[in-house]
Amino acid sequence: MKGKLTTYENSEELAAGAAERICRAAAESTAARGRFTLCLSGGSTPRRTYTFLARRQGYAAVDWSKTFLFFGDERFLPPDDERSNYHLVRESLLQNAPIAADHVFAIPTHGSGPQQAADEYSRTLKAFFGGGGAWPEFDLVLLGLGDDGHTASLFPGAAALRATDCWATASPPGVLPPPVDRVTLTFPVFNAARQVMFLVSGANKAQAFAEVYQGRASVEQRPAAGIRPASGRTVWLVDRAAAGALSDRP
Ligand code: 6PG
Image (cartoon, rainbow, N blue to C red; front, top):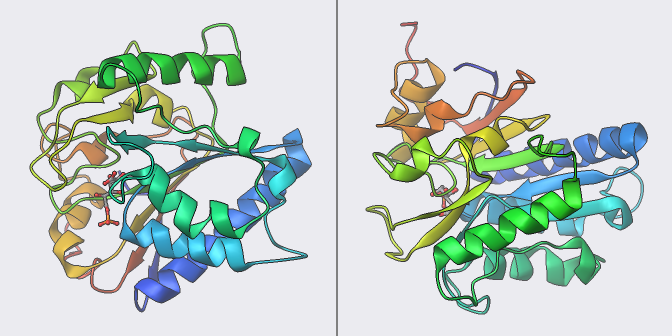
């Protein structure tokens, strides 16, 4: 796998560093293409990052009028449920920054079930990105890593790992809480991104991170190993605890 690794002293510094890099990516994307498409992750590390992002103002902050926000995965729960990723993003970012409602593309969770929601989200993405069938090119995808090696809602052994012909799919609950159905974008979508940024914090992630980063993991067992953007731009922002199991072994 590999990718560019930056190690931070702790999760707070990691979140601040991530916010700074997101601002840089936003500036580069808007300069090059007039807009910035950012795919968000759930999780505790991103939450801190979003708080830092919302706090930034003025020069070197994200230009929210040119930014469009999407979600890499969602728990199939009402948007005001505290366990929903939308809720997390709303509390940490949307409420605290000047982001227009029509720039936020949440994964729907009101329909008859997660597969219907996945299909609806695929249509939303296709309408936004167009491209006549080509995979969407997010400017930046943020991802977390679970201690079992999952990323987004791509869980070890799940059928969603083998979804190669759709943009979003339903995913049954993994072994980690909360035990609810999920909707997740698929590998081909993540791998079409211009840049993928993993945020990994905590000693409980050390083993999974080392195996994925050093290319010692199978996608079935450690799904994050399946993230290999065609652009070749994978950035790992990791704190010291999460980097603790890296070895010199290739
Ligand atoms: C989710 C996330 C998930 C998360 C990892 C890491 O919906 O739970 O999208 O993939 O990023 O579980 O989460 P933490 O940063 O909280 O450890």
